[in-house]
Image 1 (tube, rainbow, N blue to C red):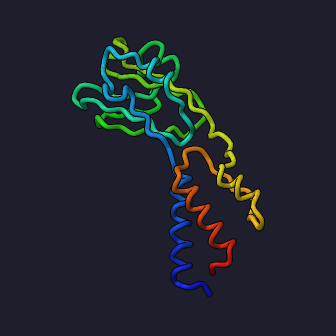
Image 2 (tube, helix red, strand yellow):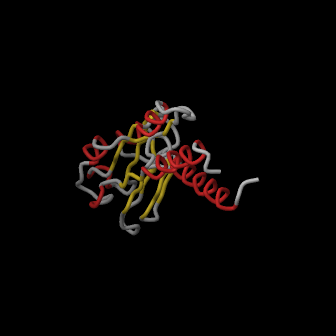
Image 3 (cartoon, rainbow, N blue to C red):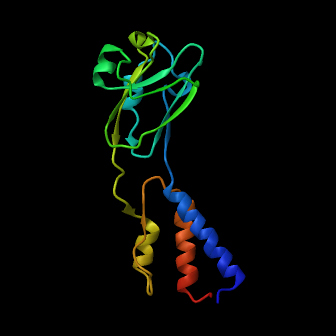
Length: 172
């Protein structure tokens, strides 16, 4: 039976591992300029890489602007006919849950003043081996290769390394 210290450490490591896999990026449209007329959102979007599971968020004056998700025709012509979604809270978070191109416009006429953005969402990249896993796999008695997905911080790598060392060295 595991001691209470061992049980606690395993639970903490499990939580850290789970938290590391839920790393999504929140892309704030226009950064500190927000969702307003006269901003080049094409340039903004081209400086970001969007992955499935990321969020795109719009910040604006809710009494002045809104956000519509439209198809390419709606985007090109600045029309909301057949819109796929609409938001008007002034602080909208939209999940990018499919690999596809998304089109967003402001539906109160400001689309003609540049308030539109198109983003291409990519599938999540394949996990890559971490340096911690590589050095562990070259050690005697190593548990094997540990794969870490995109967006994982040092906490997850540290948790995996400490758990491997702790469990592999007979501390329990």
